[in-house]
View (cartoon, rainbow, N blue to C red):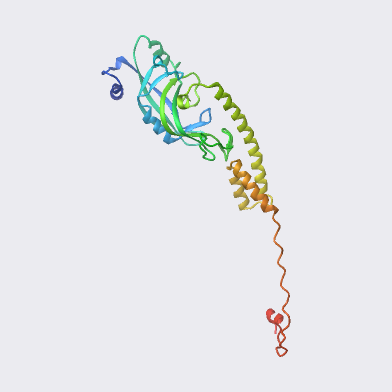
Length: 300
């Protein structure tokens, strides 16, 4: 009975997108996970705010194959979305796992009967979303990588947490697609930010930038080790430990500035030792039985 009520509620939501009321035997309804808050194979993850914005925007969005925007490639439409939390499951960074679930529908026809069987059989399973974002923040320093570069390398541990980029500031959604190779491990989702077609020239440029980033990362690591060595040059204390810990999270520019400060501090000459002042000369007053020196020592 409860299952029937759920189906009726879903059918009412579904019929908001149709020109006439459809019955359950006319439609095929299926569930899918669009994305989640875990780090995917690309080293990205959606923020909680981004997931909630995607939840609102994906209602009514059409599904296609392999991000091919031809109208004849439309297969299904999302009519309900919700965020689903699983406190028993943790993300790579230790947060409670949250995913964006959706209900989609197709009208049963002779042409899509094979597709429905493939979905039921688990053959057509992985999906990808296409959206636009305004922020792609480094998890270590917070830099928005869509505007500014930083020296941190995705996948490398900083302070015990792998560096990744946090996707935020969703400005639009375009479509979702059935795909063969997903990026997100749990949700089986591949993102195509902005919904733009593949550009071989841009891909080659990205690879070149990736190699340069790795080189800069190696040089930054060497610089960081040098700064930490300077922190402990005069021994280990609370101040040195705090400074060395801070250096683990600095980018190359900040490390260069800190190293210069440390080197300048080491190069500065020690202040000249203060010698004790000479004893005061005896008083010229011959009638006084005490000298200033004896008075200063408290002797009589």
